Image 1 (cartoon, rainbow, N blue to C red):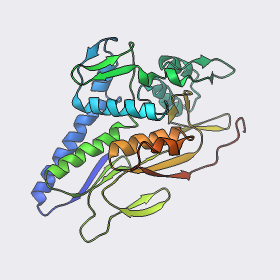
Image 2: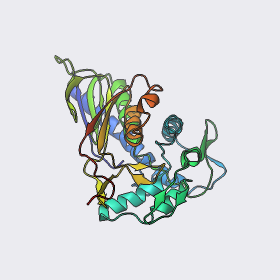
Image 3: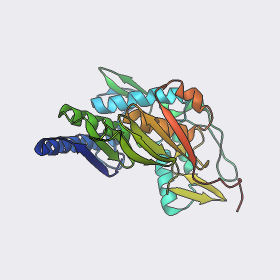
Image 4: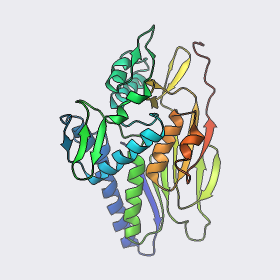
Length: 299
């Protein structure tokens, strides 16, 4: 996660509103401490150091997110995978240094995707072996890992979950009209008083809406240009490479977690999007092309 958060709300009692917002931020902080792989002491970083082939207790928050992620992994046929942490670490460094990650094959190997080495790391994915199937959950016993050093990256789902739990806190205080912004992903409550909705600027244009979560996923400003191909920070677990199609996907969904994760899955899986969304009938999406990909190998 590691993203800025902002809360706007309407209430008749200012003191109540301040208490509600403080409580919502505290709830977000708890999710950050559980799920941010940027924090060495977070729960998800601790999980990566646990012994394999036995169950370990985990928090209810982490359990919910991993359970949803496991389901979406199946529905997306491996396009959404929270266990590609080794790959995303390599791509973060590659984009920061603007150097193609020659060690990306090690990250792919750690996720169970078969690799064929060629001139520059060419990949042959085996979707049946992607790492999302390598953990199990049990309501009473917790989390089971298939092997050691399973490194999670919840960046495509935890922010949305943070939106949801913050919204729950505000509603518990009786606040129904709110906008929660987690690094550009939004959760909207009821419309502001006297308005038909919140006016939101999306990649495809402005909309007035309420009672919905909104998330966008795409190349944005984080990318790597290599041999004429622009690789995004979004990593396809089926290939080990950053996606290069140049599209931004914006999703509207009933909850932040669904919006966040589905936006990530649709950004990675350009084929079969309609088939995937049959599983999520309340989700809608738009696609905006930010740039046209160069032909492979073009200067």
